[in-house]
Image (cartoon, rainbow, N blue to C red; front, side, top):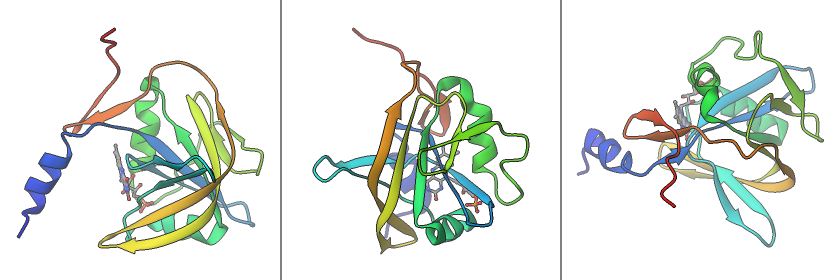
Length: 160
Ligand SMILES: Cc1cc2nc3c(=O)[nH]c(=O)nc-3n(C[C@H](O)[C@H](O)[C@H](O)COP(=O)(O)O)c2cc1C
């Protein structure tokens, strides 16, 4: 039996970037959640994914739209991370953003973005592995990313 606290502590040794997964419904409702699980999966064909909690209300809505946009956060966007890690409410209230080529919310000042169509949704334990087929992507700036490690936020320190 693996103790959940121990699991979190040990797995928290592995640092991640932070991104905000966004989408919009046909009626214009915008959804978003902060994740540390975004990852590249395949180059040919180009696939990328993330792992939302089954209980995430935002994911349930994003799934219905059939697409998502990954907004890779810069170190200066900790406030954006906190906003999109909160539960409920209109997370976009007062947030300035543009749109990806497919019309999904694209947050201002991100380092990069990746627009995907939902290719596969695989239930795994209490989370879901969402595989996206990459439709469009762009690097916006070569600034420093926001990192999450050991339960707190960091940014890069170059070693070479
Ligand atoms: C740094 C960080 C990383 C997170 N990574 C994930 C993740 O990979 N998957 C997930 O479901 N939630 C993750 N969360 C929590 C979600 O952001 C949060 O539970 C979600 O926004 C709740 O709102 P919702 O019910 O509207 O989806 C993370 C939160 C933070 C602060």
